[in-house]
Image (cartoon, rainbow, N blue to C red):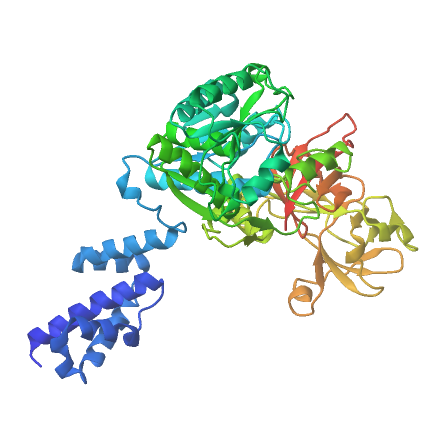
Length: 592
């Protein structure tokens, strides 16, 4: 082997080793690079016995470099390989599949179309999370369209319009446009008139049972062949309120023998006597069905892609008849399965949650027991944590399960670094039966005896010494949780204060050093001073928990995210301070 060939082998081996190490964020491995090295350089094969030895020395040198050094060296040798790495990283980060035929559109436009019959439960967050992410990926636009054309069965909640927009903002997105379908009745009427004139719709006064029998038998309705002028006149009478509810409908003329009976001559408009709650729409009585309204709006607002539930596949097929009459191109459509969320006892249903609130079984939409976006927001869970979890589900047609633990893990990464630490001692029903200790309703009180330190000075945050320490005076007694009480004669380490032995009626300071914890297995527990503390009520999914926090907790403000050591993260909801300093502060538990 001549020097020139050896130099080539060294150079090629170095490139492959650098690429391998950077791709896997680990040291390079000779065996891992041999296949690609020999495959891309066939002339090396006749020296197959020598190449591994040469490559091995190069790999050893590469493994001495840090990631930054490896990247810089690969940039020198082959900049295209660095670009390939970056492209692979970007592809790995892109959880969502590419939108179908996206390259055929000048601009991607997608819509989130909520029915504002109540604030959103957690499952509703999937649509704006995914659409908003696609908007960012494609530099497109997101429309929010309130599909509020059912003032009776799914009656709009006047507070829900703003609540839903707040939830979208909470998830991290801002709509490019917001419209309400109830503002667009005249537009739907005009398109219905055009459809009638094209011979694509007719007015029908059959009862529901009569038409159902005809439809199921694939027989035409006797009103199907009305002249256009009659249908137009009767539709105008519908608009003018000349008919009672159920007396007349407008049907789209499809294929009466279609293999799917649900697609046969479906209803486009009906009469609803219940006034719409919005004053601007209260006088209308002729209302479009969702398939007609949504289909027209998707075209007029330039939607390029639609995401909807797998159970709504028939909607696209119904709307296709209307699109064919008008000569419109139907948007690209993605159907996905439903999302189910674990951990909640309350059904993830707007009507169910509303009923429980009305019965007083839930305090409101932001009750920690409610599976709503308002609830998790009040608990201190950031919208980004939910968004990432929802996007991670992809767009599968199968039903998917979302574990709240995934949201909690995401949120923990977002809040942990900023959350100051505090001790919080919870009350427990078990504490009231204590025979040799005092239960004050907030932890179990024990006198301290011995020559113990006057105060503990634990860090504000264990990873950030520059943030300083908290000052927790020990006083003459402390409160600890019932589950932390050691057996008589056993020791316990009060965090930041030292080692104590449980005597009959007190905690005796022993003076043992930290080896008692490291080598002898003495438990480390949190505590608060018996006198100088802050009353706290913590609202959780399992009910309210009362307790007391260390003195410095009094300096927190509403909306602060804290970590109660050995308990979990919580959001400070309201701070109640009075002249005595013993008013209750309310927090909402987020997660461990």
